[in-house]
Length: 69
Image (cartoon, rainbow, N blue to C red; front, side, top):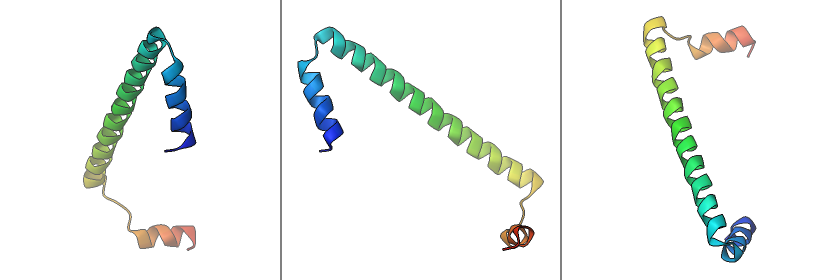
C-alpha cells in the first residue's frame, strides 16, 4: 500500500461521520467528472476518425519529409 493510501486511511478512521459523508460526495463528483471527460475523449476520437475518412490523412513518410527527418 502506498504512503498516500495509508495516510488517507488513517485520516478517514479519525474523521467524523459528517466529514466522511462530504468526502464521499466529493469522490462521487470526481468520479462523474472523470467519466464525463472519458466520454468526451471518446466522442472526440470518433469525430477525428470520421474527419480522417472524409478528408483523408497524410502518409507518415510525407510528415517525416516535411519535418526533415
